[in-house]
Image (cartoon, rainbow, N blue to C red):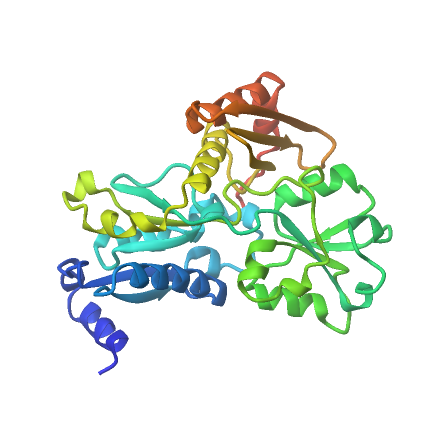
Length: 345
């Protein structure tokens, strides 16, 4: 019988069976069902099986709240946990041993007894401009789009930064799987002139040629953690079992871990999520780490932006918090309180 079918039958018989799986022989990886999520999860699976030849990895897919509620803007639904909560339920029940997320979707505060235990090497972190076919020849950057162009995005962070720089654009919500969004863009009856998408997702899907411009961070700071994959597991201190943690240690890319830890500390100090326009970017300059962050008003009229260049002997958590404090001193706290939208539909 097919190993995945056996796994599904085992889950249906009794969830406790999954809790008794021996991860030294069989590891159950939780993933969202989307094509991009599965590509990302299979990357993690293949890395693990290449590192541990005797390991058998099974992928268990599920829809999350964010996948099910496609008719509501992300800013209206709630916090970022809408893409991770269902997978975390699987971790807590023991039906999966680890969950693979896009790091940008992970809240900075995790459920008790769960931890972020591995971060993979980062793909391109910047956002990408993707244009309607009618603009392919003449539009090479945001500067080339004519006034009144309709930009498709559901991200308040992207909208606020574009409004700050390009107040003449119009914005229209677009949600769904990556392929679905591109199909909406390419429709003969043109609704959108362009979309703003994470470059990492396009690259992983094999659609790099659709990228018309990698948007410079001077124009648009990415989401915290954008481009990196995160692996969440039960805390070995709580479960009294370090097997899974030991197995996935090979996945972590240390420079990415340091950079993303600083970014997440910055976001955590500001207590931000997908409901407020916050962006961050990091890069290494020799033995130093540069982190830049911004908080904006929803209409883009206010942009508070700062950066810090620090030696690597400073804790990345302390560095991220120090950047947040600089923005708070400029009034970011008051701005965030004023701009946080209602979650009422």
